[in-house]
Image (tube, rainbow, N blue to C red):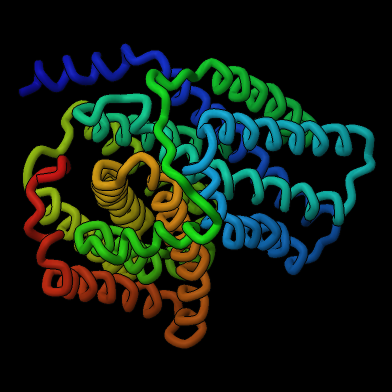
Length: 408
């Protein structure tokens, strides 16, 4: 099995359009992560207002929430490579304006918020098109590996972007933006080299079809179960928003521990994505999906009760491993089960689920922490994830019984 897995991974890495696309996504995400670190820091230095700091995130989230479903329609109607290319160009232009305004001391609160909206608009259209594009670049037999390799690139950017930005801050925030401009330009060039091997088919579509992605998922229990399971797991089991409280009040550690714990889930996700790229799941994918979500819930419970930094790190690291398995299974199932002319709209629904669960999960954590305290909040969330995993076995028996990723 090892040799065949290696051969298949080599086959994937020999697909030049996919490689160009992978490097374009990695460099684009790297630039984006660096900019997000700098934006928050710069806004707080400029205004000293926690409210304005929150507005930066809101300015990026609202366009994504409002535009993602229409963006899925656009991805099914027009050339997806050109859509991603246009979004990358918009992000590069926004970063260039940020860099120029910073270096000329003309940056303002309104300017940061306006450019944050531009980032949100770009991401709203980029995410569905990017997710729907991958199956056009690789044969179905390599799609699971491609999803895992894609995920590994994103995790590298999530870990490396803030770390690189932190190092460049020592030289000045202008260096963060300047390097981001160069990395984003590289992403733009790489994306311009992506060629879809065969012409993508496009069925007739009009604006009444925007909600077809919702109807498509609703009529397919396996896909509905997989996407909704992920939504509730992230909604209930998130602990990121409460990490500063845990580090300071419970673990009684310093900023070094906060950085370590924030990186722990991404580190676990990265290692698991690399493993899955070489050893894709073969059987029992439905049971594994629900089982790993249950592992995620257990990890949240252990983290909630931990009073040692090392144990908290291990719990969050394994939670990243569990989350990556569920992400790869869910995304691969969605792409394999969805016709090409529907992938943009279905990916858009998936993106809305992810975005909503992340944002609402942070709100849920804060609200329950105010009521039960941080330990009670995360512990209740972990128990909730376990209950959801058990309930989904009964509500979605077709998902539980699903053996292979390929349609049966």
